[in-house]
Amino acid sequence: MRTIPKPQPGEYAPYAIQYIGLLPDDGQVLKHLAESFRSLRALLAGLPEERLLHRYAPGKWSVKEVVQHISDDERIYAYRALRFARGDATELPGFEQEPYAEASEADRRSIASLLAELAAVRRATIQLFAGLPRAAFLRQGVANGNPMSVRAAVYHIAGHELHHVRILRESYLLS
Image: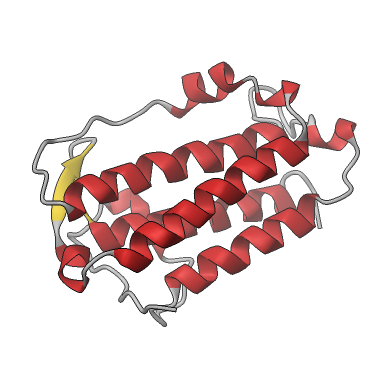
């Protein structure tokens, strides 16, 4: 698989280091994306419905809502990356994750449906970044008032999932 060097500070919003920093500096972000999906699917396989609807504290998302959030965030960041990769300088808005989670009605869906959606999104994400010209990875735009390079977007996507899997393991006590 193609190598994509890790972004440097200044290519992403300061908060994004919490995601980008979770990835090794080996350039294999697309491989990590493929592996992390398999790991997430294995983590959730066979969980009973009551565990999938579990919220570890009031106001926190259910396991199903976390899976939907990973899909939503990935779609948004891949879209941003596409725009910037194609040289679009239009500043892009942010998004509020709480209304997205509520409007998703993820708890009404089966985990198989949510994982199938994430699998499709993940395949599209990997194909998008695998097919970009090398020069596109350093192109930048502004999203939610912050600079973001194309390569920062793919590292955000991969690290964001790792962040949520860690929360699922530690706070939801999934293993």
